Length: 281
Image 1 (tube, helix red, strand yellow):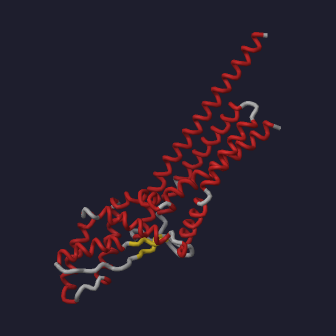
Image 2 (image 1 turned 45 degrees about the vertical axis):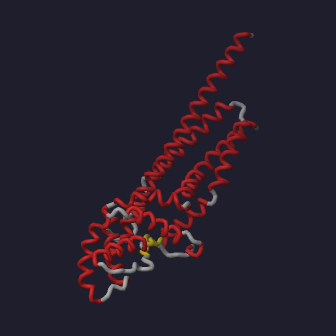
Image 3 (image 1 turned 180 degrees about the horizontal axis):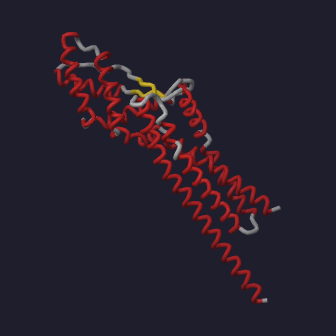
């Protein structure tokens, strides 16, 4: 009975770990605002995203900033030149971070649970463009109060809601996995065997994660039409998420290898002790 209980506890620990690791990752890199900003900050250097982003900003600044009619022809010429150099502006990285922060606050507020898509709030970027344009024309050009661009589909928005719900279970799932593992060791007649099976389980989880991560970029790039803001944002975000999660996969694999080696060592020591005892008799 102890062996059965130990096996069931270790199996439960492995299953809970398989769910707890993605839940923890989502909690730290999606639900947490600072983690979300840090994860997607490298997107500011993506050439395709920069191109589509600048295109959206040109239209918004010219149409929504209240530029006087007499200056509009000059502004239209100026904004095209400014747009191409916007990405090299010293304030561009900070404006992109502010964009991500505003987008996170917009999409993860309680009243956005039924939204049809993820919305990227580009007003910080539009403010940067308006300041540059106003400086070149020597006039004060107020930025658009809000500039929201839908990214993704309704189905992918539902995935985001599901990810939030899973992230909320990260702590209980983690505690459950630890408790089940401890019980598995307490019930085990041979703890080395229990450790070894737990290690094998973690290695299998890491292999499954690696296979699943390979599907993430293709799912992200399926957003919107080719060359659109939606497609560029989705593809790059999926790549960054997959790359970041691979470090977690490595940690799971290392943990599994350590448990497997530890179990093998304990088993070898147990057999050696048994041989010594029998030789003494």
